[in-house]
Length: 290
Length: 291
Image (cartoon, rainbow over all chains, first blue to last red; front, side, top):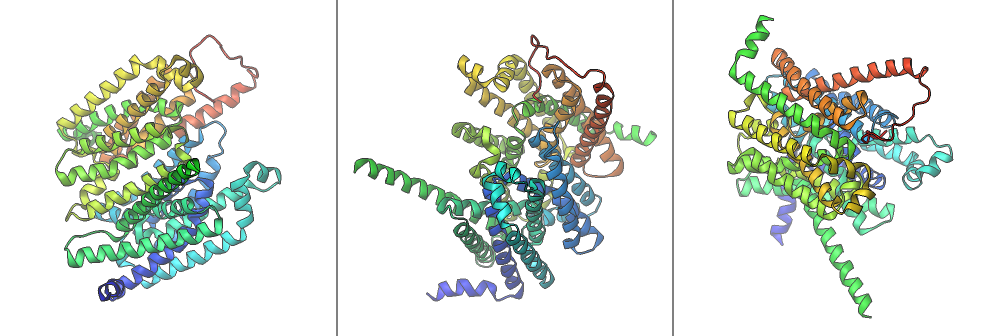
């Protein structure tokens, strides 16, 4: 019993662990809610593309010495606009264009980073994050993004849902689908921006995809999915931090906290998916027997 | 100019240039199938999936290529057996696997001390570190892939254009698997040179460029291979001149070529479109690239 409580409190005695926990919980909340919308629109690949296109902005801001936040925001806005508009180019295949924009933007970022002497270390930090070095200011910035995102999601909830469930109807009713798509891409970009410090641009796609996908297996009600998705993300983030702390303190194994969180979330998805598939099969068999 | 010639003199640079040209040509040719079958997302997924394989191979001391091949094969078989290749972009499980594979790779690498350099080079490639053995491996895999593409060309193209007819002939599933394997082989060969994330660039951008110029599949393949090789050599030269990452320089060169050709064809098309308002399709010829 005591060991259990200690496992909850002990890792979070150092202030840097407290900041990391707050950041991870905020991110879980943010990515959980936005992830459900992404899941409804089945935009997993667009999300992956967005995470790579935000990268140059983050890289430039990193070297200008400015806040990562502002640079990433500018890159997020640009890439959301470019991706949404180019995806509608009539002469070129949409999938190919997404790949084109992804690779080109990411290359610009890599070039910016590669001009520097500490190339590989910087690249690692930007791609995979360093949740333990998060400052109070970073936490505040994440909180601001959370408020921004939730406010816009609330304001656009009707349009986003209509666009998800009935794209033709939405267009016929005269809703500006381009702007709705752009707004959602911008929201995804904002999550990427918020998550850069904690989990990096390469791992944030897991925060946006996996908890929402797990929630989708359990429920098909949007509100329930959002609550579940946030809860799964939060538990995953907390477990990731605890496991990584425990491994390094007690077993002398280094485990990156952000990556561990992603692995925990992926394992949880697999477990829930298998459990539900088995339950459904048993249910079907009983129905046949009776 | 002298400096540039010196650059081409060194053995390391010569090896890297040959590798860039080989990989560029291979990806260029295969890229046409990526476009025909709408496989850009599959390409991205395979590239992501190889990442934990490569990290594991480095930790275990095995060759990078082996790790990439094993994980790419696992993914191709998984996708083919479940038959999701046509709705890959909307498949939740594939999305989760794609997102999770970077996590697994990053967690594995974080257990190793002083491993960070290798990790970054996996993601963005390290063409300058190419050894003789790598060159031979690229040449062999590339040769095999091209030979397969030439010998099964008719079946590959038919099943991409006319699924019903291909199904009627009874081997469309096998041909699908073959197409996935060809693309995966190209990704696996390209990853050490330009990296996980940028391999998708060489497999789509030269093909997109060729598609702007011609609509015939065979011509597009040759053009795309030439563009890929050109982008590889020019990009690598730029990277050596200005000391920037090679994979990124190659990608941006390919992207620049695409934009130039897009601009050029848009301008000329606008000029000629007033003359030839009606274009009749030529029914008896080989299938042309869609749209």
